[in-house]
Length: 64
Image 1 (cartoon, one colour):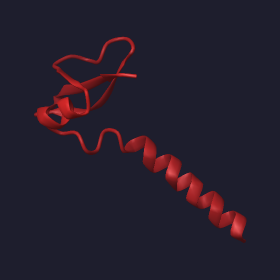
Image 2: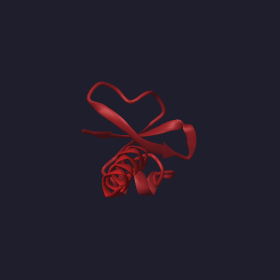
Image 3: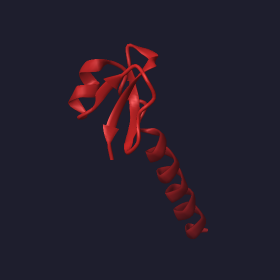
């Protein structure tokens, strides 16, 4: 029974950590604090989206 609780906790941790990157960044100031750049286009190449700036169309992007 303890193993089930451990596996459930681990699963919750993995799933919540993956979605946490885009939840807290929603304005240019927090984007720049997280070493990001606001781009009005899709994040190019080796840069990933970590949030949004102003509106959902403007992405906050950061290098891996």
